[in-house]
Amino acid sequence: MDLSLLYSQLIGIEGLDMWEGLSHVGYSREGYADALRLFCGEFKKNLALAVSAAESDNWKDYTFALHAIKGLLAGIGAWELSRKALELESASREGKYEPCRRDGGAVFREMEALAGALWETALFEGTEGEPRAEASPETLAEKLQALAGACAAGNSAEAEALAKELRGKTFGPEADEFVESLCALVDTLDYDRVLKALGGGPFAG
Image (cartoon, rainbow, N blue to C red; front, top):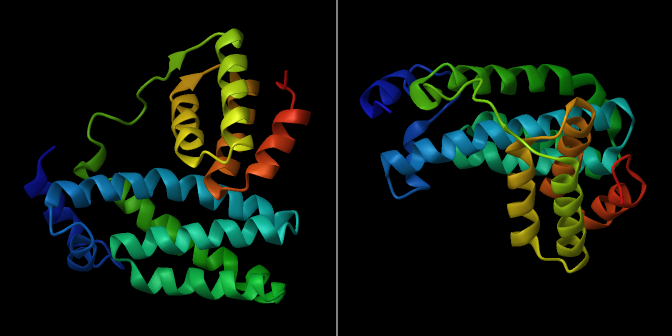
């Protein structure tokens, strides 16, 4: 990756204070690039969870997702958007859902614009559309059983590692959709809901 090109592109992204973001990683240019890549992946998952939760009036998941998004934005130096995420999170946490319904869409579009601008930079040269490894139903069953064990034990490091591994494979369209929704729950650290999904999901057992 051409770091000089990347940083010339980052300067022009509205709402991104890269100097603030760099301060979080000891002013390491490579470290900040890694943080930005992590942001793009984690933001996409949490935004999808927030949108789905708002549509179904699931304000617990909405609050979890906004809390994660707030931290992700602050971590890369997007302070104004982080503040807006905090406002939505606080409103949801306090049971004031109307501001979330009224303002959430516009705020999410601003966030998507930032993430979209990052996807257009040198961060992802040669990575977009990279195929995932195909895996068998037996492998999926094995990994889901291991994930259930990790969540039951409250082992977040193992659960997150398994979620990352699952996201790197494809098991077929229907299974992939279930796996992605499951991994989004792992991201929230609400392991009771992960276990509930594993117990009643279409690929359980």
